[in-house]
Image (cartoon, rainbow, N blue to C red; front, side, top):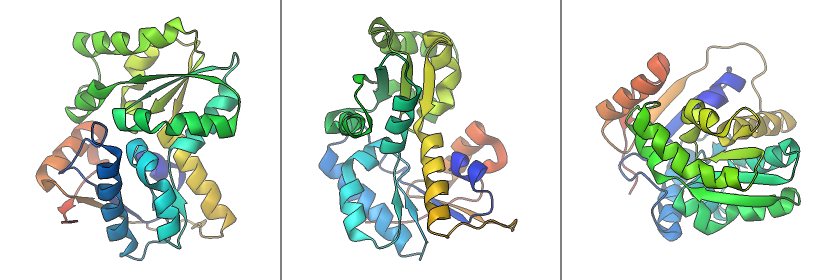
Length: 247
């Protein structure tokens, strides 16, 4: 959502975080699909003009169903990131760090097959989400975990790395430190936001003139905890979250 607000400052946003049932990454794809559709149904019921599946695991599980289920535009994070990585790579070797659900769905493999002919190496990085949720973005323990995850990809001579989970851009500092400046980092959050901007512009749905835009934060978990994590990670950007029930 931060990437979306940066690129579409005049739009109203409703953010729904299914924090009562996170992380999605270790869950079976069928369960992720069920949970994601509940969230999308809730948001669609609020008469929004577009839906963004701002999670790689959920995008992998539910995109096809979502586009058949809703009449409004649907945006996701996987294909935009793959396209950007194909454009960025110089040697045709791309790494993807992601959750177990995203990896087992092979959604990035399919996306790269559509976007271009590249060699893709994938690493599942579950502990990255744990560090981000705890507000930890540095330190020797995180650095050690990052090296464990990333050095096998470096051994494959990648020159581009997709951060295939929307938590991971918050760890850009340590990831860049481990892989070095010669590896281009591709954020699935930023590329998704660019795809949303392009799509709304093409459909003439974009608020182009300056206006007072609203941001509403909803969570399925404890609102106080949600506000606390949001404040630690993003300061005053996240505030006033309320709890909703999906199932």
